[in-house]
Image (tube, rainbow, N blue to C red):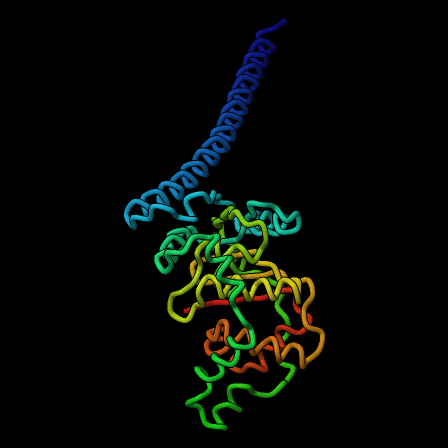
Length: 290
């Protein structure tokens, strides 16, 4: 074998060795990236849970419903999928979409507004009377309005609004893609309408008391197959299996929705008729309190 062959073999060996080294470095980097990603996800989850414990100590609750609620941080798409799957399987505890990580603190703050236990809230909800609720809300909301103002509020069915089946809690503002990090909470609730009681949700600003939430959601579950699938500090989203099929039914339901959450009209659809259009045949309900 001549000198040129030796030189060629040496060069080939060097190139081969360098290639192997580069491949090993790439593999190590990929493994490190994977491990680092998992480590960061665990840190974020632990951080969120630590925030809950810290908030509990600062607020001074001795018995927080939220205390027994687990949380996870996933990508928006995975969080939405997990919450909907949990609903379909009627899990207890049930995973709910809860929006951005900051929602956890807001859900804790919500519990400032009642001293009732979860069981007491559920028991009180059976005292609720829908007809009385509607009549009282009519007086509260319509008493100072002129006939013209009432007509403007009710509006006309124009067919401009279509049902929306896109959940927003795991999405960016205006629904433009999913959140990179979305919060999931696991809420102990035998039935969907027990969720506001478990969270002690409501009683601030125009948001109804927890027992009113429970009573209305019990009514809606029985009559429309409406189930809560998402709750944040100011928003509730629901999956609806038996939505209204006629305009009259949608209008009647829209009025109750308005009395339950007037912001969805006053700062949303603009008229009760427009809200009714979004409810007709729609499997998605959305409520938001300012």
